[in-house]
Image (cartoon, rainbow, N blue to C red):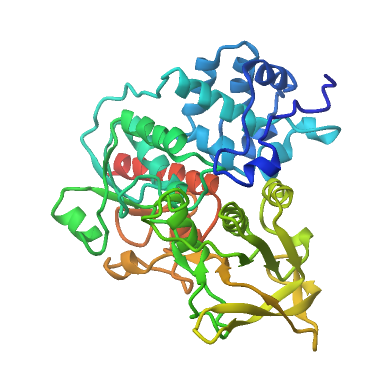
Length: 460
């Protein structure tokens, strides 16, 4: 095969996968992975490593794939990442490691993410687990939240000899990995649960059904339970709405609630957990969560429209997710914005009033600002509306912790390089600090905080 073109990867047929919740991407075979790995130029100055938020030694692990030493490849990845099977599936590699790959200058970038997934899946199938030989250093650290930031921070600290306990509010471990990302993108039992087991194999303890701020506070953890430092990786699960008329109608959901019912509570396969199975669903928003909600609603039998106020060029969702959604039959109504949700005589959604938009000058995000077109309102029929407009941190932790400062968006204030907050021995990272972002950026923040906590203890 021409070295300029990446080895294609198998996927379920769009018409078939639109009717099931099985994983869309089928992954590389061993031969395909080796063939793709051979495309890596093994650069002396590997820009891909700098493009990775957790700094995986990408050329080194890829070279071991070329050598068919998959266990060594996994060992190299695991030195930097606690969740390689997750990252290989959901990371936006096209804007990170692959986005700066030298191969991509004149052809296709090396499929770094797909190779990472292959290695992690091979290790899981062959029961290869990460391990640490670090002796206990006698220090006890609490981690709040078992999402990507918390799992990464806990895993890195365990490797350094810390006694780490994760406290998770839900009954299952994984945070956004279990409640937010659909099964067809990230299998829960086969992938997420196994990644969590790998973190536990490093010696990390996990306590579920513990709501920090209700069950126990951060101050109580430190003053009464003997934890010498705390990392807050509680995510951003509080949904945002537009504030337009009709948002309180029956049939209006946040994407967070809709996806949690489907993903965490298995509503798509278990009638004991109710979920809206609308016939005509409108998803408002254009990010990855909007794509997840739209593709889930489609699989539940609906005709699905994504309404987004900018053009396709400004869609914040990954190109791959938009492509998959279109293939499966999701309809995109772009440069349009809801102004009202309409009710029937029983108080349920019957439709949505839309106004057309055009793009003006760039705003603070760098994207062109959408401007309403006067007199362009029209109505479309709908029985379900899913709002996917982003999320913010739940204020419970910050409001019950003395000295933990937040900004005007409710995000915890913490140093980017170390995760240090204004409260002594308390660190934070991920969506709780930045607002809703990607899995890999949360992992990078967890890694930075683990380093910051270690430096804190060494400086005492």
